[in-house]
Length: 160
Length: 354
Image (cartoon, rainbow over all chains, first blue to last red; front, top):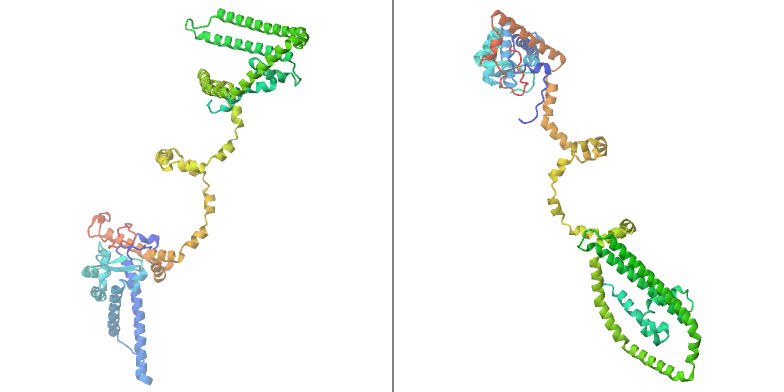
């Protein structure tokens, strides 16, 4: 399949940026989208939890009222797993796909599961480290520096 | 060439054998004059019954004419041989004129003599004829005439008896002699010059039915004898091709007309379009393209958001570089500068250093 003709579906005006490291704005935008995804996911989880309580308690049902800490912990865990699974599977989360980004290693290949999990944990625990990409010459965040990854513009679907 | 036509020779030699039949008398066998000349005289006499006197007169005239022609021919031959004498390069005009004068005088004399002899024969015939016929009937002369007739008859019979052998010997002699004579004559003739001067070759060729000649030629047989391979091997095809102006030839070709004559539909029918389409799709990885087109968020809105994100990234980078007093141009040679991360499938245009 490697010798087959590849026809790029990337628009002409964006082709010159493909493969280059992404900047702060694009990456923040991707994270915002991912947070919206997380919010939807939390709502779905909450709805599921409420449905389970309804089935268990019957007439004594009432909506659960989780504490902020609970929501934060659950959200952090869900977000970590979401990021790790997305990066290891396709190299991009939904937010990264919307913004045309992809997380790759130093060789440009898709990262492995453990590295993706480590990077997602770092991102969730210390999200402010993303700002370092605005200062870095290589546009790497602190997480990128630690796990030796890069975030590049890649509008194509196929990952590595 | 001469020996191939013996019939003419035989005919000429057999002519004397017919003399006894038309003359009606064996007495005339000894006279050579009334041979072919008498034939010509008989034709000129307009089929009238010739008398003995008229025949004799005609024979004298013919003989005179032949002698005159012979003298003229000899004179002409002598005249032609005169310039060949090695004494002088040019013929002597006095000698030629003297020869012509002598020839003309001799001819005139011969004709005059022939005419006089003919006149004398007529006069003698008129004068002596009646008494001679009477003398033949005188009794004392009767036995003498009978003896002459008997002797002539015996001589005639002897001639008739020896005629076949004599004719055979004469024919053999003629057969030996005529080719030599003709060869000698032909040796003296320049036949090429003779044909060129005397024969109208154009008229001769115009009379030849070329098509009939060609129709009789078996061209297939001729062609089968030709070693075409040997002929072609001697042809310098490269030199011939170099002399051909192919551009001019191609310029004269009506490509549109050629294209109209091509049965495109027939060609398409012979193609396995399904297999061809399958091959093309496999080569260009069409399923992947479709997947990318439908799977990616490639709407105009997303494209705009992405491009604005890239431009915002560049703006931020410029601001940061300006704040940090970083020279963006110097970053180009930085070995740690992020590259395309080994993505050869993407357009390799070096973008702005962001």
